[in-house]
Image 1 (tube, rainbow, N blue to C red):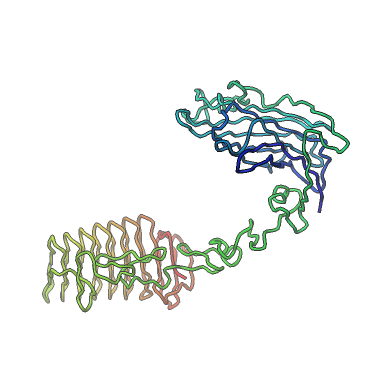
Image 2: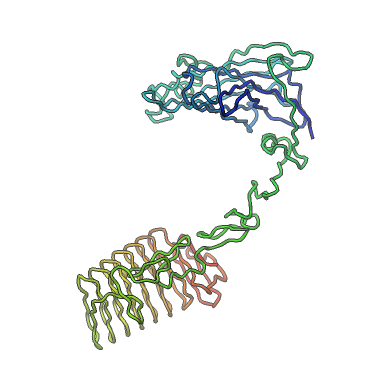
Length: 491
């Protein structure tokens, strides 16, 4: 533990926010022992921003050889907050007295009535003088925020006198003139017997760096480069930085234990809010909420919607208008209304046309297309080719080795029993991993996701060539060609 005397600022505030002058400490490169505050700097700030106009002042101080700057922010709202002129003190660390100090003051003045917003920067640098208080004066001029021309690093509407001066290797001073950043610092007054200049207040502060205690933690962090790593608060664990492992999605329960996409960390455990929510088999759960298939509605997609009615059997909901095939292979076309279409037996070609349709090929090898509208499309038994169409569809292969195509829109694709190929096509598609066969996902675009049904777990997850291969707990596999599914939501 090192006990140090810091030079306190005379930075002034007023009003009900802080009713008295406050002390704000800026210390450069503080190390294991402190020097007498007799060798110090005082930065005096003034501005021509009218009294009472809101502003934010951000001051950054660093040694030219240091990469650990110290920053403070002060604000003024009406009659409350920082007053001008103001000043603050800087004390060198042991071995840093010869280091040049760089001070950057950023002033942000929001628009007020007919007065436009103004942003400007003033930079100053100075060197300490042994045993003296060096006084560096910085004037923050509204003129520096005026728009000008000739800037090479910013857009024309951001080209201010302040930016232009910086591009020229200078800084913007009083009246908007470009001046050198090296301020002409006054040597100030000699310290008194107490070791502190008479117009600067002294305070006593305890800083512990590297001894296992932070008091306060901010000061330990400001000198951690020289004094060792700052310990984390009792509620946090160091995982590179200090994190709360009970809530961190990247370090859940322990360091470097990220939660899968779509899950979040709660009490140190990764929780998928959709892990047990099947949306009644008629939708997709996203962030704990169901996105229902066409024809269904409600918080868990258990009610009929979109003009569909309960059937009393399977499917649970369907349109009232029926278009049925025969026992022979045929082409069955829907209508412009919402249709319940069934191909029955035979190798059928089914097309739903307009409306929110329920289309099923039923038995044998069928070509089934929902076409326009949001449709629920089933292949039925047999090796079918099933396509959703142009909108957000629910597309099922059912029994057999099927090709299941979403088409356009954000589709939900389910292979069913058999070795299926699932092609989402355009849109943000959602693949259901049912574990009922060795399936292949071949997606082409969009931000897609795949999730296992309850009870299906991923035993291994690896990249083989350009594809991702998921081996499931029941021995089935899912191959994602080109690793084209952005989120795999399987435990």
